[in-house]
Amino acid sequence: MAYIKGMLYMKKTLNDLKIKNSKYFDSIAENTHFPFPFETNFISLLKETNVFPQEYFYLTNNESYAYFILYKMKLNIFTFGKIKLNMNVKIVGIPCSISENGYYTNNEKFMLEFIKTIKGPKLVLNVKKPVKTAGITVGTTLPTCILVNNFQSADEYLSSLRSSYKRRIKKAIKNCKDYSEVELKGNCPKSVYELYLRTYEKSLYKLEKLETFFFDKIEADKIIFSKDNIDLGFVLLKKHQDKLYFMFCGLNYNADTPDLYYYMLYKIIIYAIRQKCKIIDFGQTSEKTKLRMGAELSERYFYAHHSNIFLNFLIKINKRLLEYKCDLKKYHVFKEIQ
Image: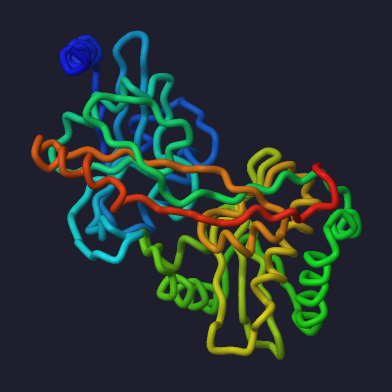
C-alpha cells in the first residue's frame, strides 16, 4: 500500500508541473535573490571555474517550487569505504567543496519526486534534514564542524578553554610566531593555487577541483601565511551576514609546518571575532582537530536513487557501503557550556 501511496503522490506532485532547465543559472533565477552559497554571482563563477558539466532546474506546480543544480562527474561511489567503483553520477549539489546543499525549495519531497524521473544514478549531497520519500535511499555523509562564537576577543576565547586545549593552541601560537600574515580580497599570487592543489591531491575524499581563477574572482578573504618570504599556507573565508564559511585551505606539506594548521584554525576564530560572526562553519574533514578548537559536529546526509529498479534496490540494501561513519569521542573543550 505504501508503494501505491507513493505512486499517487508522485502523480499528484508532477501534475501541472512546469520545468525550466538551462545551462546558465541566471536564466532560471532572474529577479530572484538567494542566500549564500546559492547566490547567482557565486554559482555563475563556479560554472566558469569547475570543469564538470552543470545545468540548472526550476520546478513549480502552483503550491511548490524548487531550484537545484545538477552536475555530472565520474565518482568513486564507495568514497568512504575500501572498495573502489568509479561511475558517472549526476549530483545535486554546489559544485564546490562546501557543506551546504545545492537546492532551494519549499517542498523537498516535491523536488525528489522529479529527481527520481531523471535517468541514471543520482546523488543529492549535504542534506540537513532528510525527508522520507518512496524509492529514495537516505544515508550519512561527511558532517560539518560548527563553532558558535560568543567571544568578544582572543583572550576571552582562550580563557574559556580547558587547560589542555589552551596549552595546545598556545603551543601552535608560539611555534608559528615567525609567520607573517597577509589578507587579500582580489587577485592571488600563484602560490595560493599551488597550495590548494597540494591539499587537494592529499585529500582522501576528492570531489570537485576548481580552476585557478576561482581564487582571483571570488568575493572572499584570503589569508596567506608566510615564513622567510615563502608562502606556506592559506585559508579562504567567506562571510555571509553573521556566518563565516571556511571554504578552502592549502598547505605546503613538504615544509616543516607541524603546527601551522592549528594556527590557521585559531586565526579563523580571531577573524570571526573581529568580523562579529556568530557562527563559524569550519567545513567537512579534519573533524578531530576542529572539535578540539571548540566546534561541534552538524550532521549531513545524502539521497541516492537510480532509475533502474534493480540497481536502485541494490543501492538500498548496500547503503552502508556509501555512508561515511564518524566515530569521534566527545571533547569537553570549554570550561563550562557556552
